[in-house]
Length: 160
Ligand SMILES: [Zn+2]
Image (cartoon, rainbow, N blue to C red):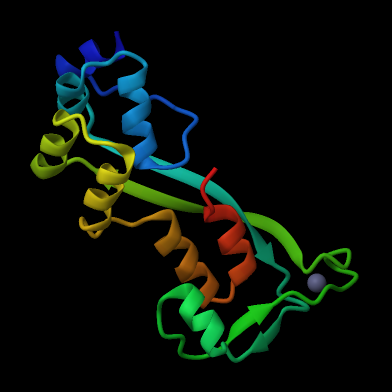
C-alpha cells in the first residue's frame, strides 16, 4: 500500500529496522515488493545512529598515530580526543549522545542496479561510488571535530 501511494505521487515516510541504506532496499524486496516498483517508489533513505558524545570537561587531546590514521583511512591534521572521566560525566568520559546520519538519494544508475536484483554488497558498492554522506563519513567528521572517539565510531558503525 505504501509503495502504491508513493508511485501515485504521495510523499510516504516510513521506518525500517535495518543496518544501512543497502540493507533497507534489500529488506523492501524480501518483504515482497517488486524490485522495479521499489526502485521507482523510493526517493531516498536516511539512516541514523546515536553515538556517545565526549565529555568536554575531561576529554584529552592526543596525536593520532599511524595505526589510527590507517583505521580511519584519512589523514588527521590536529588532535583527536580520548576518554578520561571526571565527576561531571560520572567517570565515563562521555556525556550525552549525538546523531550521525547517512543520506542516500536514488538516482537513475542506482535504480537500474536495484531493478537488476542486485545483492546487498552490490548495492553497497554502488552507494559508495555515489559520494553520499554515509554513517561512517558523518561519524568521522565528529571524531575529527573532537565530539566523539575513534572507538565509539568503530562500535557504532560496525555491521550488525
Ligand atoms: Zn568528564
